[in-house]
Amino acid sequence: METKKFELIPYIHFEGNCEEALNFYADILNGKVEVQSRYDNPAMNAPEAYRDKVLHGRLHFSGLAIYASDVFPGQKAQKSSGDVYLSLTFPDETAAQQAFDRLAEGGKVGVPFAKQFWGSWHGNLVDKYGIAWMMNC
Image 1 (tube, rainbow, N blue to C red):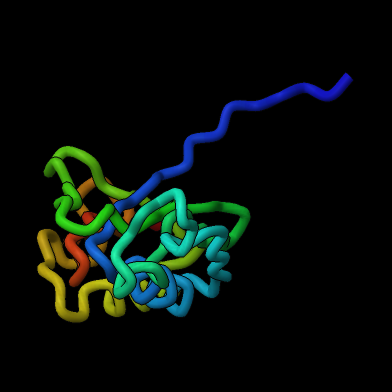
Image 2: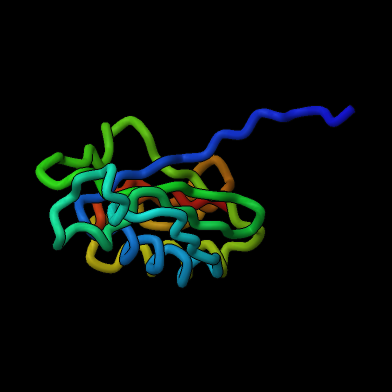
């Protein structure tokens, strides 16, 4: 009998630029984007100009996943409550620094990526899509 395990998968909402954001993250994290469905399903009753937007997408990288979608037109995506960050731990500081620098492009750095007083490398930022990240090593 197969034992089931818990999984915690972040699910991010965007306001029409989900596919762009997922591709940006895939490039940084050497991942793969899979768009499972779009708003082109007639049951969604989406405006014509919105039918190519992502209803459900996934980013797979390093054995991890992030799910994402575009919110329905006219809705606002709550980018971050300010309390939740996507926290990534890297095997080496060079890879972490590179990912941090790329995610910081067009965003806002909270704590620059550097060796911290507790002995580990850490930095945090909010990227250009409004998503909060922590890089650790």
